[in-house]
Length: 128
Image (cartoon, rainbow, N blue to C red; front, side):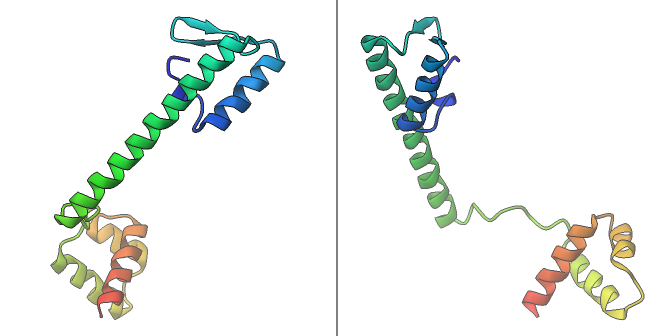
């Protein structure tokens, strides 16, 4: 295991994994170091590494949330753009309302998937 933060999400989770491995007589290798979880110094070192790994993961989550909040405030985080233009969406709705076209027909005509047709119709209904 090259990095401890890939092994567990939290210190208690890492501790449970280490205890399980120790019960099976397995030693843990992190990078080039081999740690014996039954040895007091190995246990201490493992707990320190797990604490730093959890701290690093928490920092990454915090920075990601902050970055997304800034992007959202600037209007940059809006999600994926619709596959169809506004005019195409209106035409799809018009064709659907005639009752002459099935969902599959509309998907084929507009070269989109059936779920995209349903989403487009749902957005059109929400706007109306």
